[in-house]
Image (cartoon, helix red, strand yellow):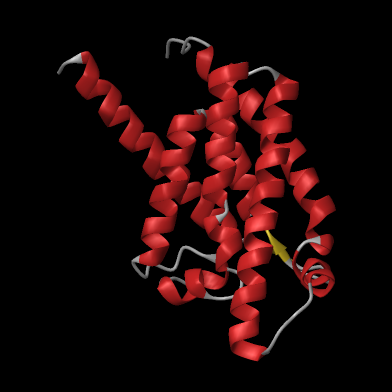
Length: 187
């Protein structure tokens, strides 16, 4: 097998593992006043641990699986209806997080603060895209909603949990990368 074929095989394997991690974390719901999932943690972790290119591939695979109807989204839901619904923009917005992270990684390297900044910026763009999508979808279904109300429903309750998930993902992914570089101990 050529080096290029091995790399392609590794890329596909990482993309599948990353998509599976995002799906499993989407099913984990933390009950609070406004329940949230660990989906964004997985997105941050996949990008940081696998790198921008492979992480972006994992996010794309995750979205394609969900669009095809597999129950990979929160609440074990799937299908285009979820992506076109009021919260679909936040899910699609993960692609923007991946693109921003991949670009930052390419130009700034994998140092901690640029990496954290890229993930935070990606999260902000995801929020912006998702909120705009929410406002349009909500208006079609229930009538117009103001920006303040949309932010109050969809962003404000999730800011602190998402920042905590970002920090946890950076810690976990750095540990995973450090462990993956160690040589295996003989049995």
